[in-house]
Image (cartoon, rainbow, N blue to C red; front, side, top):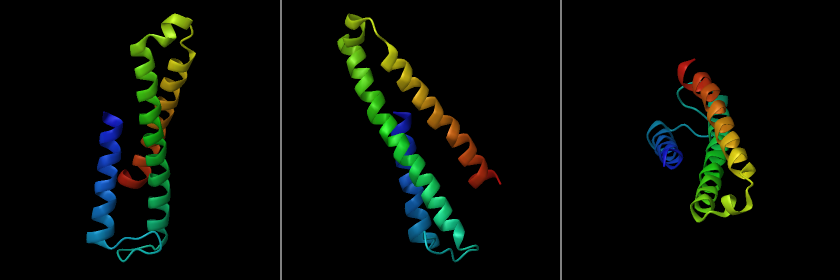
Length: 102
């Protein structure tokens, strides 16, 4: 739910930047032109990975709920899903620090 909320908030932010501020991937009327391309590429790529993670975690959660992993006795997929999600989360810390705090 938090991942889907994050992607929704990112779409809202992009809409505000593009429509109201006029910031585009090929230009930025408020300053450096390369900001738009860097911002949209990096946050878009991250949003794509968050979306993939939400889908992946949903599939894994449904399989856990059905008992697929309990029957097989192999929970490796659940661990990999958790590691993927935490990696995506860790990357956001650096993206946030770079674009929003710096």
